[in-house]
Image (tube, rainbow, N blue to C red; front, side, top):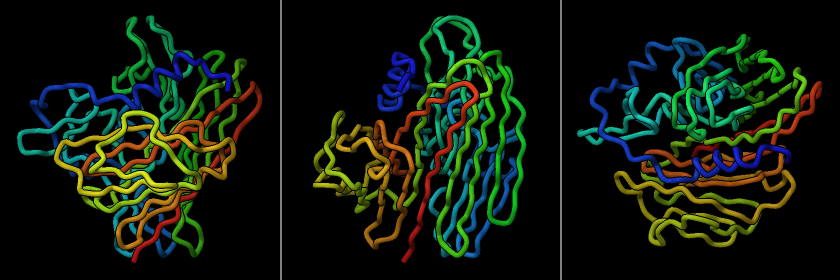
Length: 344
């Protein structure tokens, strides 16, 4: 992997690090208003019905942290909701999320997102004033000498050209960006499989510039399976080990291939820890998340995992696998994730 290691390390550390300390937001708006005021596309295959929010000035997600294409604001199978906003309100001065006096979760613009969302490490970032690129967002401005911080909201100088094409059971987003030597064509398709409770997310990234594109991307997977996550299990093909920030033993048990949530997570309780044990092939990108009744989702990727983080609060459970993206000028890369849902 030829990625700028210092920048990759900064992104990886910021994802696994503790939440920034921040005051209670003075003014916030209910997420229902954001959903009502933003456009969405509904796709269905007769089993799954999903609402997808497209990018744009009035989009549901308006941050600079995550890929803005294909934000899933709802996905239902047999009437059961798997995603949807994990936060209650939004406020512009919040960096990640905070709690108000009514115990509501208030998300900032760069974390106010839902579904299986992706974040690319920035390209051409330097700790000095200038421009840099985030795939799926656009050209952003670095105003000072501070290190990169994905909780920070950066000015968007150019979003590139977005196009959206949708059919009954799929939607295709295309972003064409031109920024000197860093130019690309990025395509992302969300497709519901015919006759099956599966969502397939397909990516195609073509490097149309004169320099290599070397980055990483992870999926945050904001899954809302069980309130408090009690009894939820996360199972991998490999025997796993907690590498950093081990959670409390009365909350998480790691045994063999499986992580189990032993009790409901408490109000304001937060965990974020790295696990190891995966190999160098895509066969280890096969993650089964289940509730106590056996319902849940299995996530399969066609790329090797390079890093793996687990994040949770009482409202959401997230498995965050990372993959490497290295594309020479004139070349392209394709990768996909398949989500298989199950209800009882």
